[in-house]
Image (tube, rainbow, N blue to C red; front, side, top):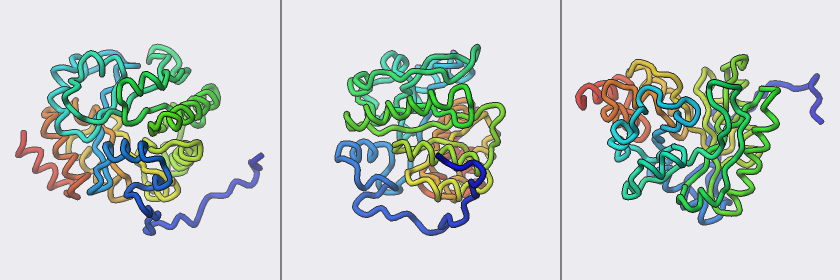
Length: 289
């Protein structure tokens, strides 16, 4: 058992020293099976090692929130500009064209809504992810929440077991409770916990000191966009995360709630894959809109 009186802050992060990726382009994935690598190569562009995931799974807890009232009208036109789609299975079957040929990171836990206490979830049957040809499955992990931490870590463990058996990678999504500190120490703990329990990708939030969060996580990290920001601020968030070592973004509201969502997702893509600086990407956004 860990001695709570002797938990020392890490010091040797090796910031600036890339983790070796012998034999495969993606961090922490060299020893995975061929099928897992194939699916990860659909999500992450092998040329850049990065991804722009379009998240529109919000309805599974929030219902028809702004921007996703009509997936067919707001989201489907954006699909061509995304590297990967993150959504729930009901919307995928009902509204996402199978001809879009985009990899899917399938939201794979559910159980509560914003009207009740979140994160008391269960994980869907992996066979449904197989039937949907998912390239990854996503499971929430609520680190630091006494009521749900053990439950959600167990969900992740179950999902990893099932994913390994079926060749499907798992993304651990770090939840942030009301009392959680949004700092590098917390996100570093949550991200490392996900990776240690078998997650192949971690989705978390950007914060100051994010380079330490990335350095101590042995698998790729993508950042959550979070609440809607002004376009320039959202592009700056993406840029700082990528410069700190993130392997991509998983943005929803900062894309589909933008005044011009198609222009915004293309500008985000230019930051992630081409290294455009925020001001350059914002100019691109204005030109496209």
